[in-house]
Length: 95
Image (cartoon, rainbow, N blue to C red; front, side, top):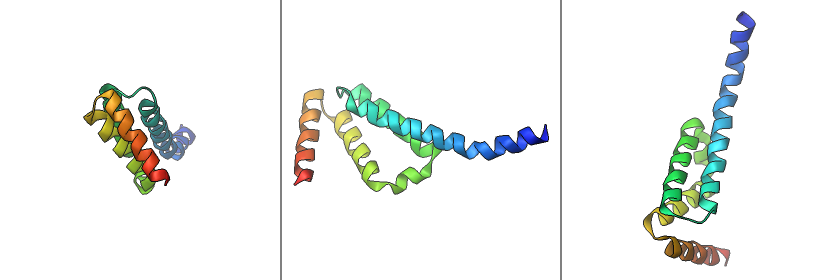
């Protein structure tokens, strides 16, 4: 009984980190499919869960900015406009 409790405590931090990685993956998967405002809202919720489970995601600022930018664009504009804004931004940043 005591060994099981110690074992559970040793793995607890890995559970949160694994959940954070899963939600991080789901965030960008939701942003990959044809972008609709509903997918943008789902991505925002996944991203919120990822940050809640592992705050170190905030230190990966490039990933953070990409996710926030895409979520903001997809939830703000209709589907075709959001695609063109993201494509234009990608081309400008590639220079």
